[in-house]
Image 1 (tube, helix red, strand yellow):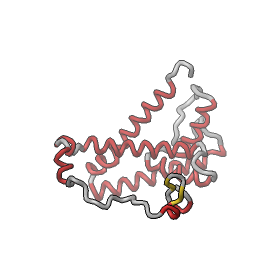
Image 2 (cartoon, helix red, strand yellow; image 1 turned 135 degrees about the vertical axis):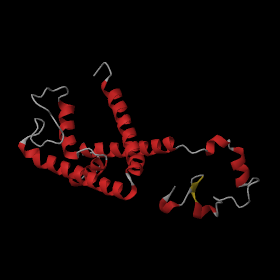
Image 3 (cartoon, one colour; image 1 turned 90 degrees about the horizontal axis):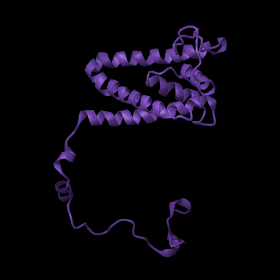
Length: 190
């Protein structure tokens, strides 16, 4: 495409060539009904499991965006990365700043032993320094806010509805994350 969205045809701008037909002006020799009849019936059968698996795939993409925010690779602005990361991570029930801090340490020092339980939800855990505690509290507040919203949704729509529309896709996301993590961390060179 050239400047202003004008197409180049054989290197000549559209305005200099005359009119270029981009849309067919004649009706096709078939109907929409004929196309539908040519498609096998099994292609029209709906599968709730398959439909929710697509939602899980999309949420895995949300996870990837949130992950990139943690690496400050989403934008040129740290506050944008942290805001987007906090919202997306919280929506996936993952504490953003807690994960960001521990993930950074994971990249620099894998397999580290801690003398006590290292929890992403504990601001006083061995993973975090004193200056990082406020960020862990903010992460925890994000999770609490999402849990409250989920509670209100469950009260309105019902627990079964919430599990189908949120719980199942979240399980699929986590299955993908386990698979991705396994594949990234099991190569013999690592």
